[in-house]
Amino acid sequence: MTTLQGTEHSRWRGIVLQSTDARPTVVELRPGQSATFGRSGADILLPDAAVSRSAGVVTAVEDHWVVSNLSARSTYVVENPEGGGEFIKLAPRRIDMPVPFEFARVVVPAEERPAAFFVFAAQHQYADPREVPARGADATRVAFPLVETAKYFLVLVALCEPRLRDSTAHVIRTVPEILERLAGLPAADGLSRAAVNFHIDYLARAKLRVKRPAAENQDGKADWQRAALVTVALQFDLVRHEHLALLPPLTG
Image 1 (cartoon, rainbow, N blue to C red):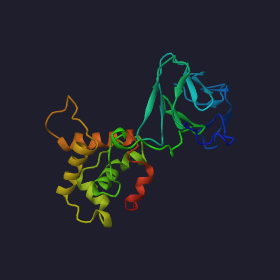
Image 2 (image 1 turned 135 degrees about the vertical axis):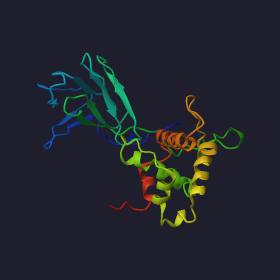
Image 3 (image 1 turned 180 degrees about the horizontal axis):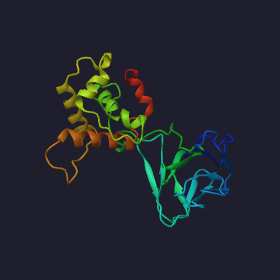
């Protein structure tokens, strides 16, 4: 029988909304409760002329939350600040869209700068990780067999670092920048430009098995490979924030 972690303990059910003001407004919601956001008369105020007076509603559910866009024109974005650039769009007049993020930033288009607020949700439940896996012919294979002590994994972490630190970053590091970032790291000793190129190709071909976009021409091979590796690694949590500890400390 599969069990759920934490069901024997009392857990916070609901969500917390927090504005981005210097003195933030904090609203706690229990399951079934709702809070409004908008330009005026709302629980979370977004004081910008381009934001609707009644822009939307957030409602707490048992272990997630839903959000409604009451605007007739504007699309909102719900970002996962802890993810690799993950976001979902909330179309105009869309009601009660479920949001899967435990921590999210809701962004509303505005005149001066995007108006936003944060949502903190209850911790998700997971199946018991101690479940005994099948062995032999019936064993499930690893989709992305990465070895975190290998040099190619260091290259992958260095590639993903800018997006991990800032989900809005679009920078894809070049080979010289990867070499510079790993310089002085004992585990990366002996890395050359040719070696980094080899590891990138190996990751793309054998480990993450990324495919060249159909519209991509034959030029700039390394460019599409590096971009695709970052996308896949972050989408599937192959590289996470804790892996940044493998890199040398940032200076400056």
